[in-house]
Image (cartoon, rainbow, N blue to C red; front, side):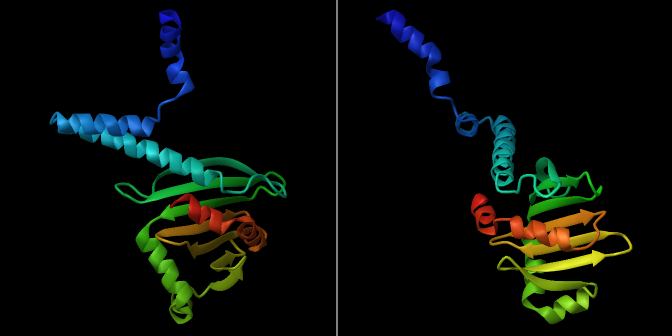
Length: 196
């Protein structure tokens, strides 16, 4: 009987895998209780990195797969800028037939989301600041759309619930239609639910 119990203990980690975030939080708590504040900060930074990775993965699952010649290249995430607490998650898509690319970015940045929300809510302010862009309703959401024929560069932007901004940035595009097609494929409700 003791042999079976010992064998079960050996396989217990495989049967019940530990959650690295909870393990890290336990180590943080223990280090704090022992007064090891520097070790506590190191563990805390690791826990934040693990949570960011889980969030990037969760949001990546909400972004479209390959469609209409567009292939997803990667999903990445990290600080929105150096020394920034804001997080940016992005996925790059490439169209091998046309050589065009579109990047979907979700930025968790209160100030960026507030500016977009203000422009969308106040068309006069929007027009004054964005002469080459227009407001469009796409899939029950209001987006700011801009396209430059000379550079073949386009952008599509909106504010999501909370403090997030959604931006689609395209290069090598024949027009804004590809950006609009991407926006129509996004499940905004599912995307917003992923980061709550």
